[in-house]
Length: 245
Length: 245
Image 1 (tube, each protein chain N blue to C red):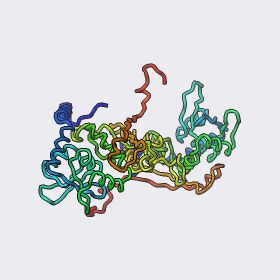
Image 2: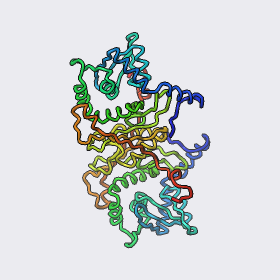
Image 3: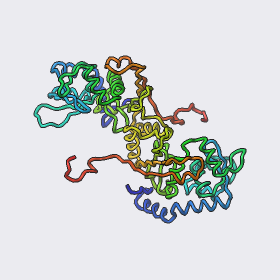
Image 4: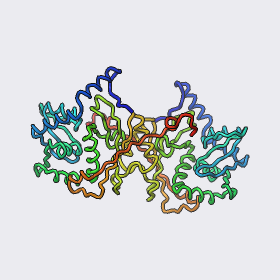
């Protein structure tokens, strides 16, 4: 399946593709990274997200890079962005451009932050590994609840292109909290049919700890990721010409 | 949600509804029952279905009552119908209008048939209870694989009306083979979104054995069925006028 660029007609779609090529996601992310480092950006850890106050330039960069979502506030010239825990940890740990404070206890080290987030959400290491795996390949990763998946994955900004994949995070590790999906055929049918209906492919990311513990973010380097796409088998399209089965 | 009768325009839809009222499903099933008893119908148990040879009148009645599907054959004036195990057992055990033979061992008693089917498919008692529960209320029940559910449920013949429910069979019993669905939120989202997209409601039938064994079909009488529909919560539609949440 080819990427489906957005636009009213062929020309507009071509333009969207050309713009995306001119301004690749890697470049946008670098700009965001520099800007956040320069301003010594610092977010606040909340229950299940991180709140970050930013000015006009960074609003634009966060939007272009597809991190978080703006929250309405009454302050002038300042917008609060709400980052998911995966997004915040990616900016903090991988891109080293965001510090994060927790209410009483000041700026958190990577280890402290990792431990705190993990205590709120046991499956965070798996979801973060999946998120960072895709982001490091310059895919744009957004929440997928609307389509019953963990993430939806775009080739570029959602304003320019439709998402190509609906991603589920699973594991071959024995983890009950994680492996609630695709255990039975009817679930596979349901997921592929829904995603097929909105022109997406089901991407399953199997994150395996390989026996490594998760007591520090350093362990992430030893986790492995297996990527699988699952699509419906359509006999008419799949058989050789003249074959009868 | 009201039943969606089929037809090109309002008049055709009204006609479909009127026809369905004139010829209710209970009447069609009675006709099928009488016809099968009169002809001493006998099917053959195969791997995961029952094969039944029928003549012109019964082809029509099976089709109108939505049992099985015709299989192409070369014999003149005879059509083989392939019945699902639930359908065959319903005709045999509940409507008492079908005998079933198993290859070498002749006509099977209800108990023999029950044991044989159960040995092929451990979850059969649950699925049969769900199937018969809906059929006894004169709903038409068809396989739901296309929509990632166990059954789709129609108010009348699928030619006259769209199906209203996609049904999943679950249980509060501790049965791993059965309870692979709706364990995680993303699965619930996926299922309700898919069914919502095709104007169906998710119907969950919880079949509970209540400690009864399944060594004879007589146990079915002691199984209970809990019916639950699950729909998406749309705040705009659900809140009181003027409320802010």
